[in-house]
Image (cartoon, rainbow, N blue to C red):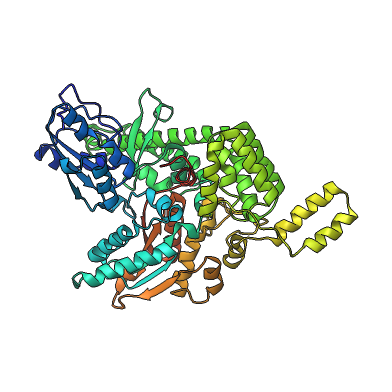
Length: 579
């Protein structure tokens, strides 16, 4: 790899995970690593005689490593090494052999599977986990999830109890158990008491809802990658972009990250007044007091001022973009769909956004929130036809993927009220009969989500006022309209110490639930520490909800996820044009 002073070196590319690790490490230069390049579908222009590729075990990425063949044709000989992370798969080595470069390279694997994003959030950074497992049925990452759990067990275990729901969660638990039995048993003081594993397909509604807590909105608008976000000139009020890490070390961000967005501006305004008051203290100081102020407080105040300006700029940018996107109308439509009311008006809203092509993601709204109740066949066909006309027939495969993954549901033909509908149809004109038929169908054909909503009280009564400044439950995450299903399950299982009395709920969720006592010796504070592992991705809204639940119930939640996700990432992972 080339040295930064050489003319053949491009700017350091933004491959966030490796870059973040490299910036904090002094070991790379010590091992004669001169420059980092992003692996792309083009030759590496370098004068170095050694190249090392650190890549994910993906077939497409392996296809890009054809430099060895190019060098051989040019009569140049270099040493090549490929390090797969977090695992090395046979399929990748087979692809190297197919390309004729297997004998020219050496391969290895780096079992890096956990990246701490914050004090209570750990990511495996495997965004492909969702598509591979829940769409393609490829279970190769399950062992990696089990290994991540085993690593945490070896460092902070033993766990007292493990709960879980979902097919993938059960397989990850079994993989973890096998690794524990195969490894050495060492006695240590437990720091994590309970573990809860949950599959993403247990709750698709939550990640498809528009996020309204501050951290979730920042992720939706600016895309947080590996704990970092890039704010553009519209936020920084300059001609340059700014990359920052968002975590609890940012004092301003830490206080507003879990707040509903409607409360953020009030908090920032009060913070600005307090900051101005702290600056004003320097008036009337003598020399000694001024010296102490400069050495002890001024630096911290300037840092806080910079952070405050940045988050005010981000909030203003969010407000402008959401206003342009008819955000309030979108939230109203989502809430109506969750409650099961005004279905016809909601579908009209979707049709309008599709025809206007408001934005690439707004055009996909019909794929996002119609899964809770399912679509009537005629509405499904109509929306599908309009979408394909607006965005192209290449999304036919996308629709197939959405249905296969369970994100887009079409209600089956109903039979329960057909006789009543027939009688009503004889009494009124055709137009009115059609509306009544839709109403009957909406009442008669309810999906599992509606039944789950009643059982777990996921959708609070709309006639009750909800004070977002003083939230009373996790529903504040979505403006009081919806309690997150995934987090509600965690709450219920912890209260009941298992799945007892939740037979109907687990049946509606297709089962695969388990509750296992692993080590009853855990005592003290560790019993209140709960590790929640999301297989298939977790949203910042769910993290905020668990933090709220922890404060209310006296738990300390640690979230482990295969990747951070949101509605955009979830839908993009199912696009039909992916290889």
